[in-house]
Picture: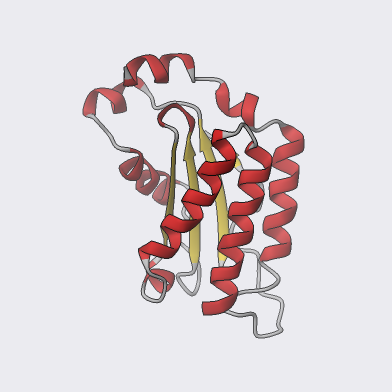
Amino acid sequence: MRWLNHLVSGSSAKTHFPPATLDAIQHAIAASEHRHAGEIVFAVEGSLPQAQLLRGLTPRQRAHEVFAHLRVWNTEHNTGVLAYVLIADHAIEIVADRGIAAKVAEDEWRAVCSLMQQQFSAGNYQAGALAGVDAITQILVRHFPSDGRRDADELPDRPVLL
């Protein structure tokens, strides 16, 4: 069944996340990053490549690969966060760099994923993504508030369609 989901979901990232939705997410991330010392990256993948399906790659494992590939780990203070959506598996994963992971419990990230999943299940992809960015923002503001200085934007704010 997983194979079939991945076969039919290949182009679904563009369908569920059209340019206007990507614009809204980008603006939300840019506004968010003024409020804390973190860097948020939002990535969406319709389906996994066949080789990864054959290996039995889980959404969590793929999120870690994407985290590395997009260099979310490569921020000055180790404060990168990846929100990863795999449409074919109806999966949402959040991967935080070690600077954040040391202070934020996995339960907090699971709550963000659940919030997003509720909206996505109802077909509200933009609302779900924006709710997720907002929830991530609240966590980062609590643990890594802005010191009032404008930090360099180390990672792109534009969501990535893989």
